[in-house]
Length: 424
Image 1 (cartoon, rainbow, N blue to C red):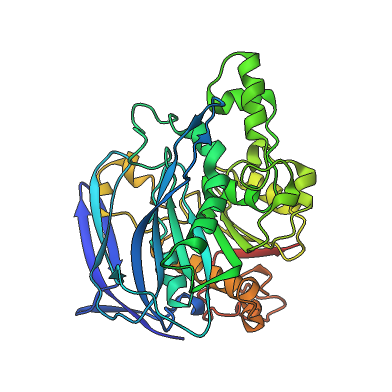
Image 2: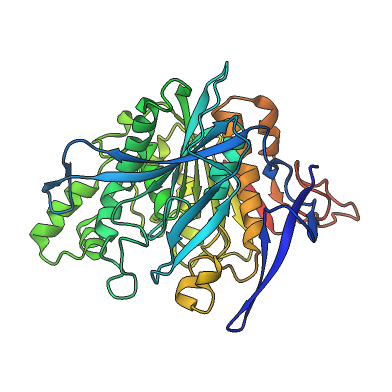
């Protein structure tokens, strides 16, 4: 297994003692050689650029009117440039700006290749930002993908005053999450920088929380809001308004009217802590007709999306290759990058990142491992990587009749503790 080296930095702020593992050179170093095998970086250097994707025509809003819409998107891709000169700039839910050093080349040329690169769309939760899963963008790009992380307009930390009007962007989020995912794939494929180098037939999608809510819809899990739910989650008060909102929300596959309109280029999706199943906001018959493999990832103590709700989605998803990876003793924050120091000292901010019983770095590595296995298996169609998905039951290696089970493929003996994998 490839050894990774990280600088160990200790940050102690207002009673928080946080050990930050940063991917920087120099000494002292902390050797971390027990991470899952496929969390190791690939052979490509990684470039990154920020693009604005404009819908170019007014799009419907939650009131039934039309308005302009554009998305800022962070795109990672293979490059030949070795110089690393980038940062990711964003802000916490409290509006505190922060900067993260990135081991990527900003605005470098994409690497010309004899093979094309599949596009993987990254979709954050409510609220969030386009780089909240930057580690997946960098990781998959290093293995030969173009990865597009969306800033979902009306749903980012910058757009929503979470302290004073926390639900201001939620109706737009419900309406636009899947639409943005489909639009982003189409736009990246036609973008002048990526069009020539992208695989136009095979793509993937990774959605976290509300991103997962949208992702299930994108592959055919039609929404099924009743009038009460439509009113509850959009704030409308009159029955007439609730019926209109219900009609706007109950769509399939990025705003289409039926599940036959799924974009066939999406060959696999990863739904991390997807929201909506706990409220049965999806049509069961439509879920049963999903043809795309879905890897659900959930904490068994998820207090936002609800573990039973995520299990309900998995159990009703029709594709036979779909799986559910359960992270035991985890809540909802199983996808974000480690908290920036600017989030320390505020439970409001740190609560966007921190897990009670898990290191963020370990969760990131698990997500990187299984996302690469899933995308390589179903998007790039590399059968050798499907074996990393063929793990079953508990990872804990509890002895049975005195015999210790084999460790999960891709994990080190004794270091796969706390996971469960369920298959259809």
